[in-house]
Length: 262
Image (tube, rainbow, N blue to C red; front, side):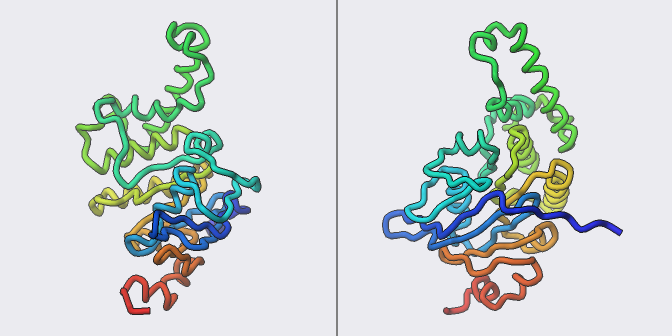
């Protein structure tokens, strides 16, 4: 018998978050928590505010109202590099890689925040800097093995198929050793086989690394298969939050996806 996964306390709490761009209200009084070691799926129709919410969480946007707490401490106007330094990693809807660089070098950029030697030692590439880079490279090589991309480790990512590029982007985010991993449509544009692989890797990351994951996904089959909990946004408001089977049966969620007049 397989033991039920242990979900912990909230690692991130959003309380009454509101975000507007001019006259457009992207988020309206959204309250949400993300719990340690869970996979939270954030779903909703196009324009519901899903990506805006991730952008608030990782500091790219600053809400006009509401508060964010990271591991119990309130955050005020945190910037993306601060969020990254504190353990929040992010991937994007559109692949954001250095296309002329190899898979290995792209993933190595995810280790930059963990490099402690100054520019002087890095320029010399000797002594402590050399030892540090070898340690970081060894960690990256383990990620390459974990995500089964050994065959493309030296290939420029611009030459890779889209599904492999998404896997490289996941590896770069994991190279930061995040406590919270934000995935914005990690399976968009993939075929069935690529989606199955990505689902497997997301579950393995959550299980083997203990990484807490919040992801935006439109494929409801994927959402039902891999998520522990589902939050639903519609027109910038949260309309449901709960176990996948309960959310799927929620009349408000059904109405939002079917486009019924409300």
